[in-house]
Image (cartoon, rainbow, N blue to C red; front, side, top):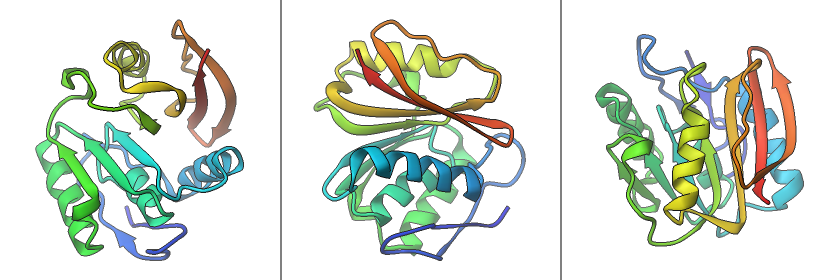
Length: 182
């Protein structure tokens, strides 16, 4: 599946997606919708510290970096996806602004800081997003001003104590949910 960076410094640059079906890259149209939703709330990505969790090819974090985010932490456990993520970052010379964690999101330890934006794109139908949100919140990754975006299958429900849904939008088979700390 050919993907491209939608906007910013690397607009139009191609990204590689992992082969096979262990990762499901966010389609360009879904990413475009997500970043439109985020831009209308954040205004700008300039200087933000973001996390791309269940990162896969890194397309979400790379999009944020392209739009001016200062730094992005990428968490991914699949070895093939990690190779692709590193290739994508390398081809854009974005590696200095990336913190790559070769681990499961659920294995991340306590955070050294809170993140401005956390983007979660877990495998559909697993409930992993709700489990991850709860754990990341308890481990200090999420602050009172953090924005969270979660991509799930269109019929999945995100319901985690301590979070309020700001917006939901269905795009094809995906549902995008933006959350804030209550």
